[in-house]
Image (tube, rainbow, N blue to C red; front, side, top):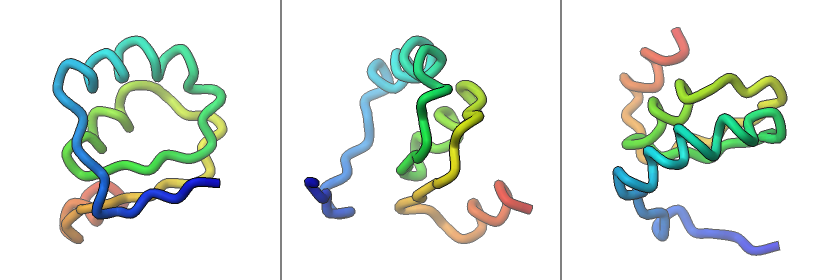
Length: 72
């Protein structure tokens, strides 16, 4: 298993993020068990579709106030 350092996570370009949210996620949403997200794309990805089998969520580079607003 490969591990990725948090320091090596780069934000997706707008074009790639749009394609990911509009085409890829809706096609595979039922197979997603875990998402690792960084703050700049988190809202778009979470709102792109429902995730009926999601049981884990990793959040990176997020302010505590932003996290609290999502989960309160």
